[in-house]
Length: 145
Image (cartoon, rainbow, N blue to C red; front, side, top):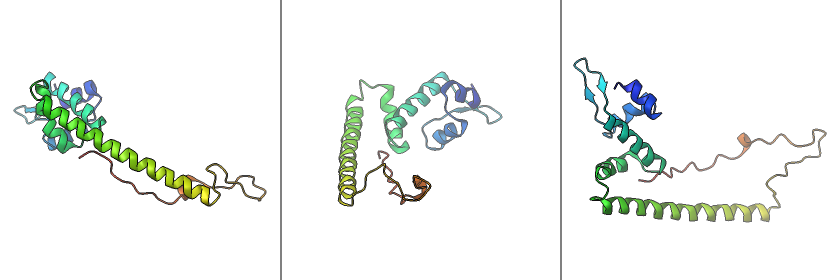
């Protein structure tokens, strides 16, 4: 099948499929004209890649895990170690996020701030506070590595 059909069948964009190839996650065959030709096995692999991305793994980790998915019984230890490490990392990050949330609540309590009171004494009623006025927050990359 061609790249457009694989995209339709998997729900993955053509751009993403090209990215997967660039990251050595997919290796399509080529026609004599140089067009990518995908098999049903490639379709299965794309779905596995999507599952791993959704679980929070980055492409370099996915590259190491894909061969293990061919025979998950044989490579059980590798898969178990990767999933266990990912779960531990997420639990750690969850604890950090919860600690930050507790600290933000303490700060709000200390300064008498309630999350949904943005009222002024002006004739307008509620003030015009918007999320875009909030201070930019730390956009940490929490993707598993």
